Length: 125
Image 1: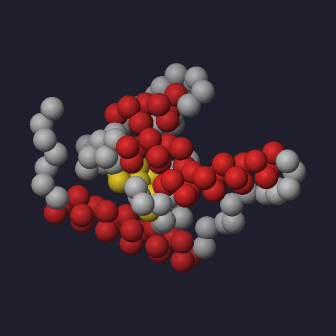
Image 2: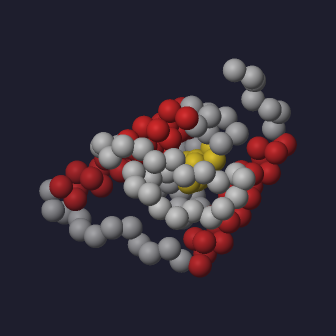
């Protein structure tokens, strides 16, 4: 998903979807097309929330899954940190990914893939 052309690996299950350059256009496209048996990888908490509401599984780039059980607290924390940054109380961004984060990401992604494989297919629409 991009709002500009980019190179992607060739493969039957890989497609590049280019959207307009409007604010949150890529997020809107993803949230509008995602559903059960889809996995979304994102660091965007609000996009994660939207995708969970559509039945998708969502994992952060650090390997921590977003779930119905933790998304409310995660959104609240995001809002609090945003307010603190706006007030100049906090500066800087997230810490760099560690080898442990990468390992957790790969394990959790594999867990999600296996869970989807075991689940019954979604109802036809």
